[in-house]
Length: 306
Image: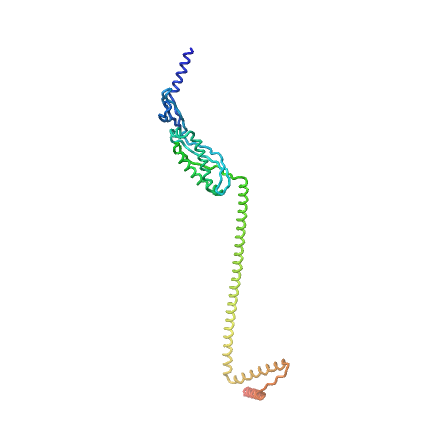
């Protein structure tokens, strides 16, 4: 009974060593007596018992590896903590098995090293604004270095960039100062615009007043011109009638009589209002004037009687 059990166990071991199934998305490396003999793709395979064995099995799908947080110094000597994620894929299982002992650990360490180098080239502000550029540079360098390992680095992503608490406080103060500066600039621009608007309004008001005054004067001038024109027409019409009246018989004498009357009236007004005595210096002429005036009166009387 014991021999039969041992034979069954031995047969099971022989079967397990002889037949093997490789899962999907897995690449297995076969060795014969410790020497690489080939790659086993997904499916059913036959091995020579005790001579062949599966030395390594690699995940052929894309793998995600955490890059631990590390301390980096920026170009402006500020310490920051940076962590990330690296995405890679095994392309050649043979190189991944014999090219390096642990490609996962090597990829992570290489990503950290290149990350420190890239952060050291940039200032703190640039590390936040140029993440894509940093990621691309890290992927390029790590992929170039890992090519002999049979893996392909697909991409690298920075998860967090964490400055120290002192730097955070300083940045917050700087941001507050910047916001205050922008607010003051905005207020200054608003005040400037308001001043410009008031100046434009005042200038427009003066222009409107000037235009109104100009129009008023033009209207007054037109009215005055019209008035003068009407007066001239009336005066001309009156002079026409006067000229016609003078041309008639006795018209000339009537005019002289009217002029004499006006002269006497104006002279009387002057004598009454003057504080000193006024005596005409040409009394002889004045006497002749009244004699002529008397003759005019007699002539008008004779004409009326006839």
